[in-house]
Image (cartoon, rainbow, N blue to C red; front, top):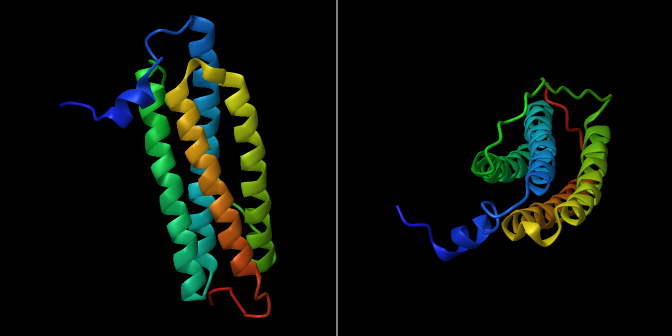
Amino acid sequence: MLLDNSRLAAHRGLNNCTDDARDSALEVLCHRYVREMQHVMRFRQHAERIADHTIRRALLRIAAREAVHLRSIEEFIFKLGGRLPTLIDFHCSHDNAWEYLRSDLDEERRCIGEIEEDKLRIGAAFPGIAALLDRIETDAKKHREEIRALLSNETRPLWAA
């Protein structure tokens, strides 16, 4: 099977790296994998607790986009000869749905900051990984805007019965 140009570009540099650079990239990818999996679980759990169908669908769409990130991260981890990190169950609980949405907003903000640090850490040695991190960062910014829009009407009851 032939890889298209974008996939070839994404994997450029993976075979020509030092062990230290590879280890650093794997560390970044494994951390990002754990964080993205937490996001998927968080948004799915949150959606299960929301009675409002529009908000539930929005959160499930965000979770689906986060799952796409996971598949891309997995691909890079395997290409670098790494293994997927062990994941622990993730559960969030808040007193009400609005607190949950606000914590989701904060989580996406933290994610953006972490990605900036990750991009600096791997540098130009892995342009494909840097491009993936850029896409994840762009999506995190979009997710923040979506969550802000959901929070714009805090008077509706959201909890599922």
